[in-house]
Every structure is written in C-alpha cells, then in structure tokens.
Image (cartoon, chains in turn red, yellow):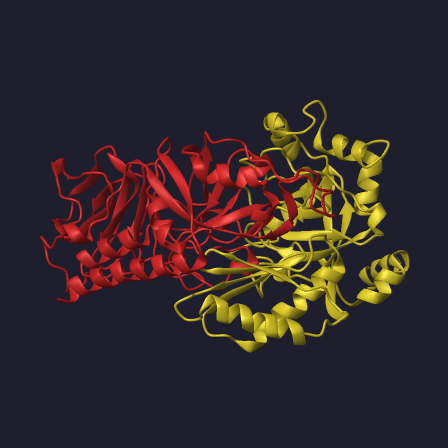
Length: 325
Length: 292
C-alpha cells in the first residue's frame, strides 16, 4: 500500500534518525534535521519514535493516500489541508484512502515532519532509511521526492489513536530571532581578537543557500584572520587550512565573509578554517531557520553544552513519557 | 619524538585533532597510527574515527563517553602509538580527460568567484606554478604518482598528495567563494591537494579535467566497486593518465556496459625510501603499475 506524490514541494525527502559510522568515508549522518519534531510526529501516530517519515522544506508536498492512514505533522507552522479542509498540527488525524493531503504556505519555521502510521517502508541503506541526496543513497531511490513517486508504506501500527495531540508544554516554538549556542574552538585561534568578539556580537541573517548540507549566514562584519605565513598545503587565503574533518554543526568562514554552519548532510571535510561548533542541542532549532530570519551566535563552554544536551534529552524523555502514559 | 597533537572539541560530539598545521606524509602516517590505535581500542560511545591529511576527528556520543575521559584515553594512545613507516597498499591508474568541456562550462559559470576571472583554472594554475602553458602543467600533474591522504568531503572523494619533492609540488588557492556546482568526476586541486569529485555538487577546488572512472557507486555495478560502494581508501597511490576525447567516450561506453576496469596493482610503500629518493620511488611505482 502506498502514498502517491502529486506535488513534491520544494525539498521533501524520507528521513529517520540517520546513520552513524560512515562519516570517515564522506557519508554524513543525514536523518531529520529537526530530530525532536520527527519523534513527536511518529509517536503521535503510534510509530516507533525514529520511524522513517517525510521531511518537507518551506513548501509542503501534495500527497494522495492509497490506504487509510493516521497522520501527524510537527515542526514548522504549515497548516495541513485534507481535501482542502484545515487539519491541526501536532495532532494525529485520520486520512481515508483516496484523500489528498496538502499544506498552506509556511508561517514560521522551515521544516515540517509528516509521519504516517506504519512509516515509509523504503529499504535501509547502511543502517538507515534516511535520504543522503548528494550520495544518492537511502530514502526513495536516493533522492528527494518527485511528482509521480509512489512511496511504500509499512503495515499500520495498531497503537495510533485519532485526535491524540501534543500538549502545549511538548510543542516547540519556531520563528523569531534565534540564538545558536556555539563552543568556540578548532581554528578559532586563527581569528583576530576583534573578529572573535565581533562574530558573537553581530546579528546575522540566514542566506538563501540554506539546505540540509549547511546554512549560510550574511549581514555580519567580515572576519579577519591573524596574518601568518600559510602552512604548506593549506592554500594562500588566510581562511584556508590543510583540508581537515568538519564536525556536524561546525562553522567555517570562507574568505572571512559568510559563515556556513554544517548540518546533518554535512560535507565531511575541507579546507576552510572552522571557528567553532553549534552544539548538538541547537541543531533542531537551526533546522527551523528560514532564509532571511535573524540569528545570533552565543559562545558557551563545553560544560554548558553538555548541560544543554541534558536538558534537551530531558525534553525528549518528557515526550516519550507522555506517550507511555 | 613526535610533536604533540593539538586537540580541540568540535561542540559536544566531536574531538578534533591536528597532527600538524602543514601537510606532509610524515603527519599523515602519524595520524594513521593514532587513529588505528583508537579503532583497536573500541571505546564505547565512539561513533566514527575519521582520518584526514594531517589531522583526524572522532565523532562520539557524550552520553556514553565523557568528552574529557575520551580526550585522556586518546592522549594515552597517542603517547604509545608507534608509527608504521611502511604499508601494503595498491597503485591505481586513473584516466583523465584534461581541459574537458564540462568543467570548462562550469568554471565559466562561476568566474565571479575566482581569483583570476580572465583565465581558466588550468591557465591560472599553470601561470602561478611557473609553467609555460596549460599543456606543460598537465605534464607535471600526470607525470608523478599521488598519495591518497584522506577520503571525504562528499561520499568517497579522495584527497591526493603529490609524491614529489616539496618544492616541486603543485599548489593553487581554493576559489574565493565555493561554487554551488561541480561536475561529477571532476579532477580538482586546492592548496597542495588533488581530488576527484566523486559526485556532482558544491566545491571550492580549481577544476582541471574529468575522469570516466566512477569511484563511488551505491549500486556497485563495476567489478572494482563490488567490495565497497566507496572505491578509495587512505593510503592508496594514484597515477593519472591523460586521455583524449575519443578514449574518454569509449571508456564512458564501457562504464555504461558494465565492462570498464581500472589498472590496479598491489604495492609496498615505504615512507623513508620515498623521503630519501622521491624520483626513484616514482619510477619504481610506475614500473609496478605496468607489470602485466
């Protein structure tokens, strides 16, 4: 039983929790950029939290169901419409075979997660159903959805319950000016003292080049690197280093101009100095940034990053507990 | 003794380690020794050990291993890791159509991101490396073997270090701003590194040509990709062979028919022998490649 894609939306792909262990070959974790929203949507329809769902970006898809289903949409504020009728976000609703699910324009946030009971039943590749588009693996034939695709669905889970909704305390707010917490490090010492300070003082604007690989930021002061004789093999620009591994969330600043923060489809390495890393607890928040939205970077210590991670895990734990009850 | 490795945390999930600021095979071999020791240790919570040219990175789950505890373990392993100075590896011949129409079209499209918008990447690279013209540059590029010192950026992309005396190594800056597009199987160069773009996508390296040989294929259709969808491994040695358009088209047809093969030979590489006599080492490697 399947799901037919009438319109694909801007960038819709199958994602789950992602894959680990292949980054050393250049294959990044992938998976839902907003992992919390993925889990919330899955749990609402009675799926395991990290079942494969659809991640859509800025413009939602139009989908025709070929079997009855329980559906939930979490993440960005994009109102679902079932045969034109408005449906709630953060709530499991019933879809009948033959009905068409579409979406209004996005109001806030950037990525919506559409979970369907039974999950999207594409084959696992390297331990995950997540799409890694650059490498053409995972998801639906290794790419974003296109009109006419027919996605296989898993057997419906009996655990789902129509009308089940996320309480306010478990919903995540999207939109507004966002702070991303950063542990400075890596090649941070290459910046001048003034640039190191300025980076965190400026308000940045998300650029149009913002996708699963990374987010480009504009509108801040150009960053100067300490002058030096460049090490052999690095290349002549002061922002160049001997090509090295890039952490997920790491911030590179090619030419000192526009910072790029990598996300879960990251390039695994390259030759631009990284000046710090957005912490794991803020990757979901970054996933919901729209082009032109304002953001600031806030420097924190590794200990603070670990504390933030514990609070994030607690929030996920609260989510799980709500569904156990 | 080795200089101490510089460690820095990449957020709460990565331990980054810089063996040396400058590239050298010495630094690569040191990084390989420490990462192999880390892998052998099988530390719970270590998700991935990524070796790079003169650095490495460990991706970990801080819920399973405390970052500081991991750092201490890795420092301990570093202190005791002996660097192997000789490896069993393979040499691979990669055919290249230099100055091809596809990278040419792409580099023209991104001229505003280049240091020298008035010339092509090959002309620019030839000039700043002191070669008379693009042809002389191509001869230098394809005249020596290259050492794969990192796999990554995108799935299966090899970074290659030219196996000649340092003063003869080709060097070029990366694009001022990375391109958003690079043709699949483009031969690139940035800093002192050559690369082959395994898939189409963004990139910041200068573009010199294309190879018809797939080096990453999730379907694993060709014989040499049957063991792994990613062909290259750190430690591989590559020799480029310039081909013309006709030979390129023929090779592409063979790839499509599933009959394309690469020339691959096993070889022993000794770091000290190379450092003592790069020219002699080059000749020996090229001979090994052409043993029937």
